[in-house]
Length: 596
Image (cartoon, rainbow, N blue to C red; front, side):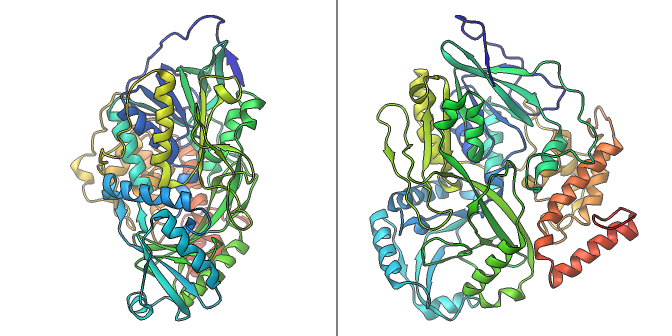
């Protein structure tokens, strides 16, 4: 909903908040002002935050959930070389290759140089190999042919039926760690970040968009929606905390819509015209995680992009992906058993002994794809390029390039930009192009520096609203673990909870609950940590609420076990039975689907 300010008057510069990161509640009403407001806290939004902060602009980022709680939190961890797109879209392949080199340089602590291979199997089309090699040549990608026997000696799990293989500079990347470090570095430089901050409308006047209205969300809203296949639900949850009488208002000369698959819905808050200018569709992708490192290099199948044709070694696990299919769901969808079976079937073509490796869990995400056959603006403002999105196969016919729309030009609504599409590998390039447009519109002179400024891995807690960092726990907690699988200490957990993070944030940042037990055992310790942290308050101002803590814990457990249920066979079936027995017999908790 667009909300008009007083006619003929420029927005008053109001700033009541200091730099740092803040997690809102329904009772909060924020008044703030900046040069630029970014809506969306995934890779696109955080990349923009970093880019614009380095240019010296005053920036505010708003995210209705937690960091990377949408698309960026559900990708497969692959830093593309461009090889996947060489046969169908050499221009996108070239862009991926360029960004691969840049991220290896500036984000080195987050990149594991696994290398990658493309392998053609007996049943794969030889003509596609020829077309792919020509695309690699056009993109500048050196695809080095490998000796079949040498590859099989290094990767013994691969199928013996491979015909040819080529080496490419693929890698795996720690997306969560990189985004957290970019966020904290931006906050240290003066940016403000608001999590659990839902944009409810735009502020407008005769000159266009001049800001947004914001309402705080309860921390349980995000937990209830994650992994549940739709919009947030409140069944069985306590009522939200008292809401503020009026929504907050944040003003800025420019607002950037960076909400990915939900970009059209966000633009619709400004009217049907802006929404129609954002031809983005939601595409569901399912991935399967194996509790073992099946291969030491990224393995791609040399055929047109299809389901289940990538294996990514990521730390101690291997991720098999991905499927592709339309979805209209508002939230993150559930993986379906048929999709899991499809991945297993396709994965066995690359690794015949796949059944012997225990699948840990499956998960689903939503990609923002540009609609096939629609003219899309790729640079925005003057000299904007337009083109048609190439691709192959159901759900893969849309462009993997990105969209940048200046709604002042397309819809007569200055002050609003939309950027969507792309992929994690190209998030920096998307931010650079968008940042160039931002400084032109603001009349500033500031060049992009993200290709030259290194990103350190920050291991401390996030900045507090005052800009400092939360104090550590006393020495009596030294060495005590909240999560044994991932070796997360209780002192770190309490400090992060004090800073405002919830259990979903802890999972993304510290990998709590992502190990072999998938939260079955550590969740009980986390309940104690929530109580010690005085939730929903802090240890300094404790407000322990047993009902709220139980609800947050239950939501965390549901989101973990939702990914285990589709792979409950073999060892995982025994694990599922143990989990239910622990809940019912040891703790007296009801089990979903069973009568009390």
